[in-house]
Length: 253
Image (tube, rainbow, N blue to C red):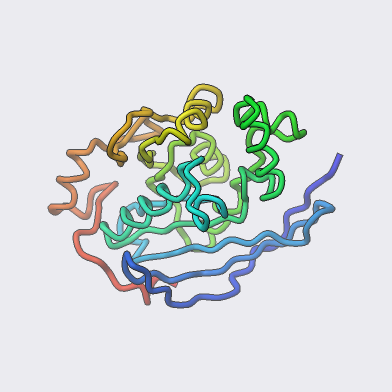
């Protein structure tokens, strides 16, 4: 059995990152790891605005070469990434932590092999098991360490995956609300998303049509869509307040 030793988290770089959604700060992190296969793990935090004012939006996102670069319709990763960036920009503050955990942690080549097995009739969980992997091999302790480094203790999590909320809570981060980040299914992704819902516990409606950004099952306190709208109109002092105007990023990092 391989034993993983987690070492020091390093903040390596911070730079301006202009995007089509607005100006972010890209902060690069690296953490020492000794597990026999890699010496370190890396992630990038894309930060907008003042994260100390209220409870910021957070998206933990795993790299998806096929969806984000090739435009694959087999998954919802590309749409979720864009939805999260738009949501953060709309509030004027928040962060997205981008992890290098392709294919739920199995890597690109194994992910393509899993696709081949799915073409033969297996679902995404069965394909991973056939290749000798768990259904989800990801470890979300690195995002929690990054949040601690950024002195963020409470978040509103943009995710359909209850494991992400549990991992943050287990690592000392309070998840005030878990918000839906659901992309509308298409004919190529529907079976995959249905498996995530039925076998992996993801909170999904699987409704065709427009993508949704509504609050779902509570983690601790849940916002409704009307509350989000009301908060945009004013009260930034409430626990889950949303900033009305974009804020500067310079003071954050």
